[in-house]
Image 1 (spheres, chains in turn red, cyan):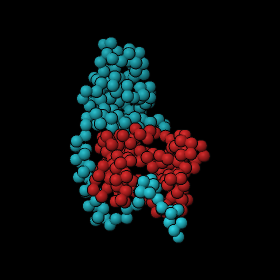
Image 2: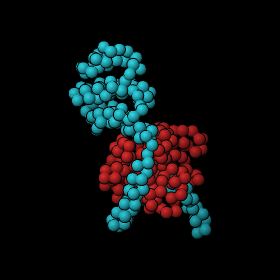
Image 3: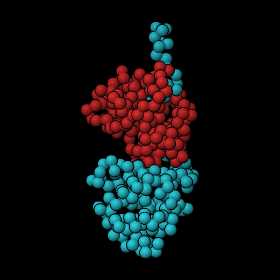
Image 4: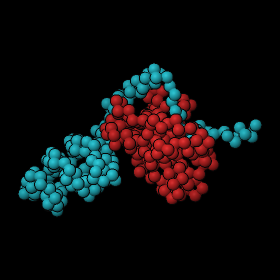
Length: 154
Length: 160
């Protein structure tokens, strides 16, 4: 798994690790757009640079067994990795692909990943990540889910 | 102020890269939203191609084996046998195709390890043998035979 350093276009290895319970307070609005301490009831994961363990992005997911899907409750790149001057690219794609792999591992053929985007951003998610329109939510399943997993390999 | 606005203005694409917002929906609204999603999800699932099913099933097996290997022998993949059996039962797929998409060494190793903790793998061995013609090298079967007490595999080696 890798991200791209925008300045050089070189890939750099990253890992996705669970967020420990006592870690959430470190992820503040200033750095990650939201106070992540309110997300402790969900499963949280961080994408870190392998070279220095810097946290580049976070995702909070909920497994919903009755629907055989994973819902992405919250997802963010760190503030310095957003906008035209971001340091690294592919952070969000890797976090979505990770959620997809978790869904396949748990639910197999029926695996699905969904999220509730801001209405204005729906077209972007559909175009960029191949999400399908599920009404207010967007979702990935079947071939669209496999495509994201192939595009952002573990 | 103007400068500040300029500084913080972020394009839609960048906003999307920044954040999926937490949905603080009223439970009733969320229920309706989920119901709408499930309707579309069900339709999409029911139209799934056989090849896609195979790929997903196979990927599930691979991910579970990886997890099993990472965690060590204390943790057994959940539903492992069932997944292997389902993989092999998808029509039109052979053991050769199965192994060509799969790290055979890893898979075999995992099966051997599992054998130590679950004698019910006989069923799995049976299925493997049924789906296998003479396409696997004899060495493969001999090594499997050597490691295994499964009668069906002994039979298979005799046939070859």
